[in-house]
Length: 389
Image (cartoon, rainbow, N blue to C red; front, side):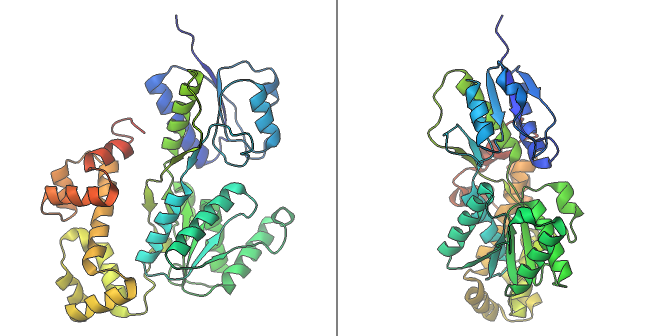
């Protein structure tokens, strides 16, 4: 009879982030297990588990918070997969989110809404936040933009929650407007929204705010509801379990961390704005976002924008660097991606729902833009319908 692997999961259990990781690990175990799993209730500030000194198991998946925890895990002699990015000096096998892909999504989301001024509100000193900030600044630099970054007026640990809120509020007040702010995570996004409220700043017209993690409870709790990037936490957890399984089978560790791309942006009211001074172009952008999948053409958009089609095309290109048709196709394809990932609709039904008259054209355009066929994209991203990461 085969021995069941004994695996320890050392992750926090209170936040949606960690529950997403655990859901992905659980899905892998259901498909490829069984495993005997040890999981204790943990918070973000909990110390290194004392039981590691005598633990005799086969593998560990952990969010390592400091050097002491890393050394304790290594001392067990079991394979370890790391998920946190705070300690990297030991070269442990790791699964991480792809911050470059997150930054590309954020910059594209803001630019589509006409923003040309950008900021990042992170937690300076937290390595994961610094990595995300660096990636965002690089992506903006590549696009010809600069980035305003939050720097606490004093050591963050020396400030109470209320003092930190006041500090963020003072920073927000100094920024040029309108501006688009990427928060390092959803909790920080809520703080930025509160800072805007303290300063009587209109969200999203004056300050658009985007978080990361898509913690639905937090995002819907915010006022206005917070747009957020879905990191695909379940896939991170699934791939972590898959990597640990390979390591327990004596396969070599990958030389670099495995990066998981986000699934996309869940847009809510905190970014539902267009930062364009030209009223006709602003109206056209809003109409495209609302009606691109309703089979409305550029003439219809121009008519409701109050200018001639020729004038709108010229002004739109000058202000956004894109054509009206480019913008329409982007909205259509974003809807195609969502339907592929979240439904079991056939391609012809998806084409009808996204105003593509020919399935072949939709498929070829989709592959040019994503590098995958619609079927490949669905197999990669669809989770609930097919049980795959």
